[in-house]
Length: 123
Image (tube, rainbow, N blue to C red):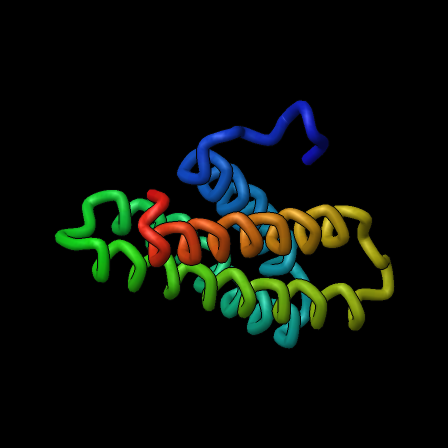
């Protein structure tokens, strides 16, 4: 995703990211057992980020809100791990995985900032 394509809202951004992860996993599903297994791990963590962000929006308390965002952050970090592993073992060295790693990192930073600001009472 380039700068013009990035949605501003974190919910929309994590949804767009999940779509990109699903598309990558569909491609991985056509490869060897190893890539299918890695793809399933990536699919779980990569789509969970946005799901937890959505859950946080309906948080019952500030603590619940922070808790859901903390889970989303953990899932984002896990997603980076799976993407890096796929990238390093993929002989094609797809530029798409570079873009996804960068986007997952940016999402992680945004979520981390939301957590910090919420704990400080700024949100």
